[in-house]
Image (cartoon, rainbow, N blue to C red):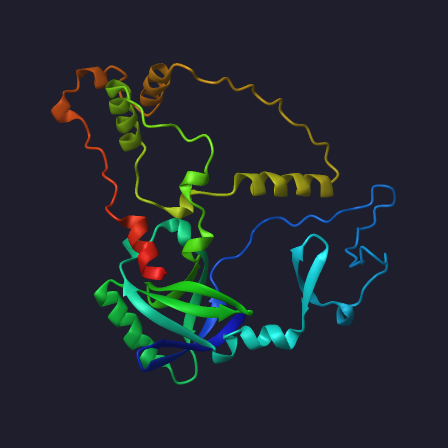
Length: 288
């Protein structure tokens, strides 16, 4: 793995020298834009909208459009002076419970390994966090961008996950078309809860795969080999209006008798999962 950042984790007066590596990789299949007439790839050209000329890198500046067509420009040195990246430090501000952070906050994961003679301090922080069951909320600057981050333990490795600031997460009140609170049919609710229980299983990421990428690679290999490609006609889907019929059919498909819900008593009904109190709100208060 290639090192993407070097610095130190800081908590209190303790500094842990670390190296950072990207924990995930993009498996998307890259496509180029091709000129159909001659088969040549299309190039990206930086062209000025006013002059219609190609612009070299040294003639490009960064600017902020404060009004339509009006910009304020910045020199690289001005932007560098604002960045805290020069400190190369992951400052842990608080230690919190991971369950208090809603997954909506998480962005990208990195692995951290000890750097230089930081092995002992690294192991100490790792084991202390493991035994406390806490994760660290930190601030870091990567490539001149300030970010919040969560430092946690994965097996015998410290991992860092960049997380959004609270004001970067849109309010649910902005989502259009959400249903208003309404009465739910108890029998349908019982059957739906039973279906969830029947489909529940321990999370095993190895059982999931990118079906689209797999089919695309098969298509690419077929085209390279010059094979004729045929596509099966797409089956028309119908919108299921009868919820009860859909629930019964789903329960039968997973091996649960459709008549079972009708025989259940109130005491037999699976308990509904209660939302954790103060979950997202607590997370926002912690990281703000």
